[in-house]
Amino acid sequence: MGGAALAGAAAAVVTIERSEDIDGLRDAVRLFAAPLGYDWFVLYTAPPPGDGIIEQLL
Image 1: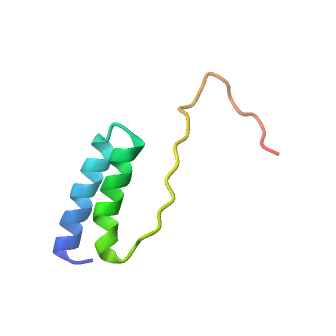
Image 2: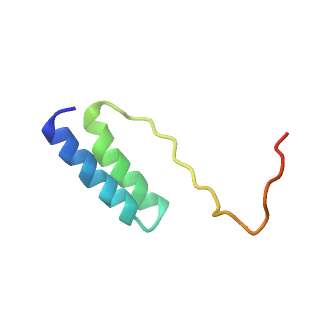
């Protein structure tokens, strides 16, 4: 990854971290990744950890 791509990646990370919703995050990812040839994305959200502790996953 060259200097311009690294600068773009840094800017994308800042935009993603400051996004207020999934739409803003999606737009930042698309803006950065589309010129690199990526046109399909899977974005999802997960709830913050709650009070309960998961003791076992089956």
